[in-house]
Structures are given as structure tokens and as C-alpha cells.
Length: 44
Image (cartoon, rainbow, N blue to C red; front, side, top):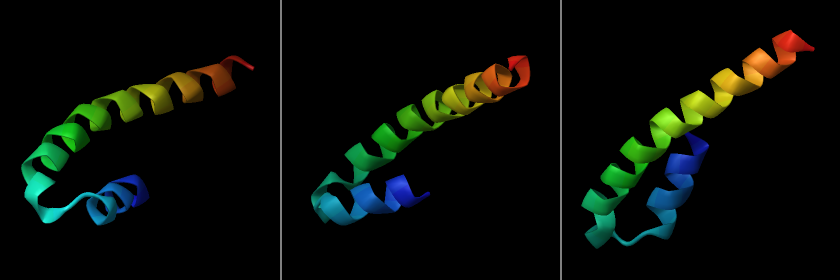
């Protein structure tokens, strides 16, 4: 959530729609990253 806030603060209000799209694109990628990280830790 901090990442989202960071970008919302950085980007101007005009790029709100763009921000929504980028956050939607990042969300699954981030969850995938977390899943692979968890699996790597379990494999250890």
C-alpha cells in the first residue's frame, strides 16, 4: 500500500486513470513475487 501512496503523491491528479491501470497491473505481479518468495523460503 505504501508503494501506491508513493505514486499517488508523486503523480499529478490528471494521471489518476493511468495510476489506476498501473496499480492494477502491478498488483498481480507483486502477489506473484510474494508467492515465489514464500516458496523459495519454504524450499530452504
